[in-house]
Image (tube, rainbow, N blue to C red; front, side, top):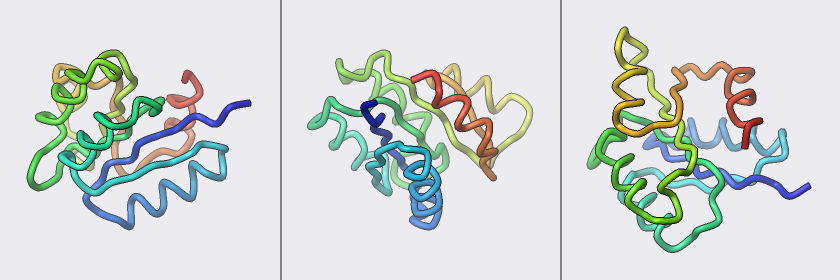
Length: 121
């Protein structure tokens, strides 16, 4: 079985560390960066990412701005992009989906839900 490659984008390195440990234990290969501009640079150079977990609230460029830019990269026009946010308020899921996210997951992350989402890759 080929490992699925995930791009984790979060401005908090502790979140990346915890998610990477969890996902590697579930046989995912993880690449990470701490800003949306860095993620865009990485995606333009690497067409081998199977899915993106994107923190929606980051300085410089938030997820609402980053998702359409990611979708503009031909290799990622239809890629699974999962919005990750601590802003779990009414309407946030819909706002993420309108921005182009495939689905939405709130922080703290429900591990079972995340694994279920990723099992469709």
